[in-house]
Picture: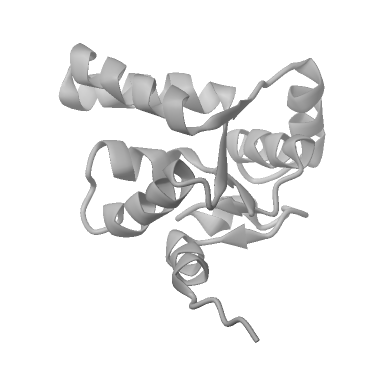
Length: 142
């Protein structure tokens, strides 16, 4: 399964934001183990650094970015994606950029805790809790 992670999911892990970090950490662990492909839009990485630096300082923010670059595939944001997002006329431009990035990367879903920003998304939206249930479902072999 391939998923695009919204900024809030990555921040939940990196900043250990309770209680959301529990599902987010499971998702990242599954990604590290190779059972899940996780993708982030390139602009998310700069946003993560900006927020993390304000909350935990420059050095820890750099460590967060290093972890992101080790674990996540990165979907570059170019003019075509930005134009596509602009033409979506969604309620939030940044969320529209995430949707356009998800479409370009061919993911199965966008994982977010903020589904309201993605109401117009043609890409399925799932919560971290829903993805955790999928990850933890027992595999039945007959």
